[in-house]
Structures are given as structure tokens and as C-alpha cells.
Length: 239
Image (tube, rainbow, N blue to C red):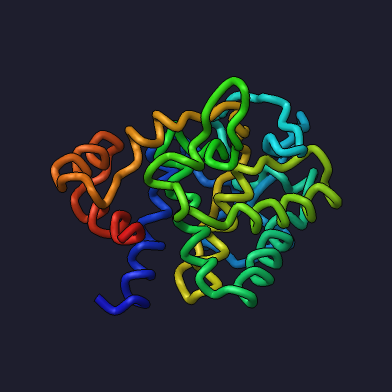
């Protein structure tokens, strides 16, 4: 399959990952009847009441909030109105230096979501309390884009300190990578909380590996509500 066509189909299917983890709100926000609009300044996020820090464990200092399921397209409208523009700019800067980073950001989001939900746990370094996901076999020496997320996080912290989670940044960066390379735009519900822990074992168990039998890979997707088409589309990214 032509790479551009494959990338388009992969991007389209990536948007359904949020459905796997009860992260899509039951209804669209008011005024959202005209379909997605590529409006980065006004955004889809809003109504932020309790500040939470999305930083991960290399000096950004996450406060340890649990994941939440009630996400909102307007979650950061008041607390960080330029969030989506800042993420877009960060992805663009990275893409100018390395065009391969677009696919890498998609894969980073995919691998984050497949292990205990889209909670940013893939960003965590090993600690005294746990071995993280970075060195799990499906991620080791292959998953990349951590530096891009950190650079974007640094910019956002300057404008909106202790506000935006890294999990949300990863989700938005994946979407921006898709749009940047000519794929479709989709609205990203926001308000994820960063995990304070990660599990190499969970990543080894849950993430599909190109070395596994097809039936094992298919079973992992089916357990998350996906079908064989999704197996082909999403697994193609790691081959």
C-alpha cells in the first residue's frame, strides 16, 4: 500500500483510540454542530477549575492526579487558551528538522493509550518504585518523540504553569502530526490526568509486537473493542 494512503488510514483509525478508554464525553459541547473547525486559538477545551500539572518525572513534577473519564473539548479555554496553537507550533518546529517525527508522535500516542489508557505513562523514566514503559520490548530503541513533547511542555509551562497534562499534550501532538502531513482533523477531548506510575511488564503484555502470532495480536485488539481492520492499520505502524 502506498505510504501516504496508509498514513491517512492509520490517522483516521487513531482517532478511535479515545473510545477504548471511556474518554469521549457523551455529547458534543454546545455550538459544535458544524463539525470540527481548525481553530487553534479558540480551541475545543475549557472550563478549568482545579489546576493540575502534567509534568512527568524528570523535573516537571506531576502532582499525582488519577485519570478522569469526564473529558471536555473546552477544558483549557480559560486556563490556557493558546494551548492548541502552542502544540501545533511545537510539532511544526520538530517536523521541519525531521519529517519522520510525525509518524513517531502518532506511534507515541498509540503506545501510551494501549497500556492502561492515555495517561502519559509512556513518558515516565524508571524510578526506585517502578520500571517504566520506555524499555519495554515494543518500545525499546524504537518509540521516539519524547524530546518533542518535553519541548512543547516547556513552552506551555511558560505560558500556563501547572495547568496542562502531558497526556493531553501527547494526544494533541498526535493530532497535529496528522494534520501537518495532510491527514484529517479531529477534535480532541481534553482533561486527562497524568499517571505517576508506569509498568514495563504491562507494556510488554499489552502492546502488540511484530514478533507475536497474528492470533495473539488480534486478541489484544479485540479485548479493547477493535476489529481486524484496526489490527492491520495500527500494527502497520510498528513494522
